[in-house]
Length: 136
Length: 136
Length: 136
Length: 136
Image 1 (cartoon, rainbow over the protein chains, first blue to last red):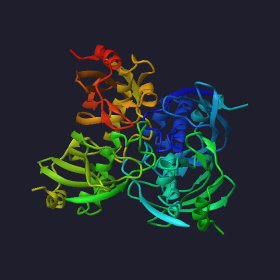
Image 2 (cartoon, chains in turn yellow, cyan, red, brown):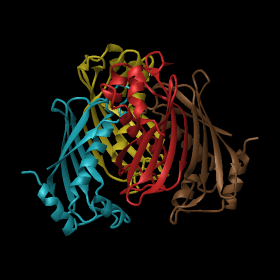
Image 3 (tube, helix red, strand yellow):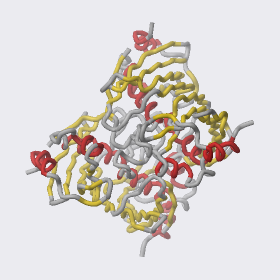
Image 4 (cartoon, each protein chain N blue to C red):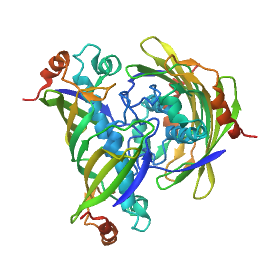
């Protein structure tokens, strides 16, 4: 499991004064990219050099508490399951100042050839880099 | 059920060249706001005058096909269930050029007092405005 | 000169409750793309098929009045100057409900080969499509 | 002068494959907020507690080199001028990997009462906190 701290940005709130719910997925994506740090070149290298990506095929989220400007989100990311072609990420988003759980998110991705937009068997080096992040 | 057509914007794609998945929730929110058009002042009036909002408490999404710059998303929105305080929206996002289903999204919201951030019984006029959008 | 109406979106305000100033440039870009409608395939075709884009090299903006959720921006776009490789766009952003001027923006772009990221002489068909939008 | 390092996010590129120019202003705003760190509660406290903000009234930007996914922007921020009610920020955005200048931005803001949306004399504590960031 990895964790990143991410301050809510000035422009990420909505007209209701709280972080727009769609941004939670972007926060989690930032954490997800860190899970690939063990791959040479990281997630950036996969996307830009090898043209391999992990588009979402399914998500489920529960929102428990709002975040506001001035808050910092702590995003914990791990891997719930590694399939033949798929990788299920799991996140907890915690409000750093009081450790209140703000959201839990499941995020099923599929390794994909970005040129053909077809699914791929998880490359061995990617599988090896992700495996240490498997949740118990 | 209502439907809106929404062109993918130049800046909504990601480094993989497809619409970033988090934006699908924003597309659906645009359609959701239209479901409130029968309330005087619409969703804008609820938010800015009555300080009533519908934050997400749960979402589930399946992503079936990517959208790219140049595509138009057709977002169909309806209401799957009206509870005492909750409203479950359901969306289909269709790629307009070929009618391919791009995503289906469930979006459970709770009527909330935005000042106290407490849940509210659905106001009668809001319930009346939403009821015609109930899916069979 | 062309004009588009663009409702402020729920998530485009910032923690100060007004449209985040950076979004004004995105609003103008939406209008800018319409200026290329006379090119076969439009701006989309230039970007995705011909790999020709118009990145900004200079901007100047004056912000006169805020926009809020519930407002609609009317964006008027025209061309102030067509150079050998450059195209200077000019925009007025008007708050539709009361015709108050919200912003004026100058936006100098350079025709660019997106693969090499080098500047290009404006293609003849593009120049011909843009010329009718030249401001007096 | 302060400086922050800010990785380009996966979703911040546009259909031309480079960071959408509007995001440069958001990057600079992130750096700008740090200039207020000497005010008790920082920029967050000004906005959320004292209802004082610094909306943009004028910007000028020169874009020199693109940023891409995988790049980190180094944003240097300082103050070019402190007026009675205004504060002129100046930024340099540098591509961290090769120290190439990506953009320079001028950003004139006016201290504003966010409730009345009227301009304010710069509060003394804010002026004192900003003064050390004045550029020579």
